[in-house]
Length: 105
Image (tube, rainbow, N blue to C red; front, side, top):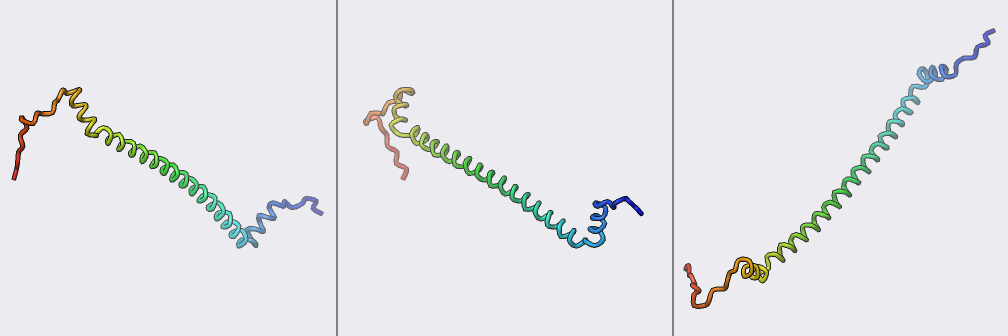
């Protein structure tokens, strides 16, 4: 009589290869499907984070643009330009008798 017990792992592997090909294939396909769902979920979350980051950057740049427009408007204001012309460039408004009107009609 043989006292050696059969190796259980070998018996299971032999059964899977000979008899259980279809269940093994289905198990493998389920595993691949599950891993692809995990991978796609991870990629989707990364893309959503990138989109949120881009939206925040867009909002920051939009605020900066509005501030620059306000600054440009303030710097181009007529009274400021007139004051700078008088103070820094020592310009004067011409007297009415020295004004010349040019008509291009």
